Amino acid sequence: MKAVPMGTALQRARTGQLMRLAGLMEPQRVLIAGEGDGSFLLQFVQLFPEASITVVEPSQAMVLRAQTRLRQAGLFSERIVFKVEPLMDAALVEASYDLIVTLFFLDNFEDSLMRASVSKLNACASEQAYWLLSDFCLPSAGWRRLRAKLWLKVLYQFFAFSAGLSARALPDFEQALQTTKFCEIHRDGHCGDLLFSALYRAE
Ligand SMILES: C[S@@+](CC[C@H](N)C(=O)[O-])C[C@H]1O[C@@H](n2cnc3c(N)ncnc32)[C@H](O)[C@@H]1O
Image (cartoon, rainbow, N blue to C red):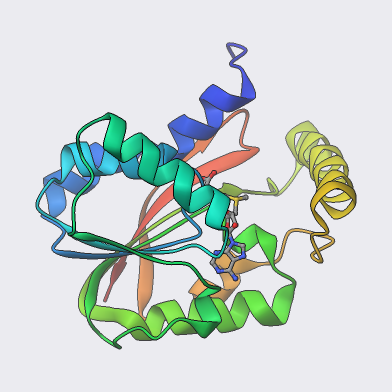
C-alpha cells in the first residue's frame, strides 16, 4: 500500500465515485448535507454545471469559504442555494432530490441524530435517486480493524475537545442506510480501508 497524505485520501474518498455517477445519471436536483468548505462542491459543479444544488450547512464560516471558492473559479451561480442551518431544521421538499450527498457528515452524530438525519434524507430523495456517501469505516477484522479503532478513538477525542463534537464513536450509518429505500451499488476503500466511498441507488 502506497502512503498517501490524509488530505489527499479524504479528497479521493469525496470525489472517487463522481465519474461512475456521471456514467449513470445527470443529476438535476442535488441535496448536499454538511458540505464544509467546498472541496467537493467545486469539483461537483465543474462536472455537473447544470445541476440545481441545495447545500445544508450550519457553519457560516464554511459556507463563506465554499462560496469564495466557487466565485474564484467563476462557478458561483443562483442554481446553488445555501441553507445555513442544521439539516433537521431545514425545510426541504420531500421526494424531490435525485442525488443525496453526505461526505464525512454522518460520522458527526450520535446514533439517534444520525438515524433521524438518514431518515430525513431518505424522505427527501426521489424514487430513482442516488446517494453518494463517503466516511470513515471500521474494517471487519485484522490489523486494519485495530488500526481504524485507534485512529477513530484519537479523532473522536480530538474533535470532542477542539470542536465540542458530542458523538464519541462512529455510528452505524451503514446499518441505518439498510432501513431506507437505498441499496449499495458500488464501494471503494481508501487509506487502507480507514475511509470508504460508496454509491447507493434507490430500489
Ligand atoms: C466533518 S465536516 C465534513 C465536511 C465536508 N463534507 C468534507 O467532506 O470535508 C462536517 C460538516 O457538517 C456540518 N454539520 C454539522 N452538523 C450539521 C447538521 N446538523 N446539519 C448539516 N451540516 C452539519 C459541519 O459544519 C461541517 O461542515
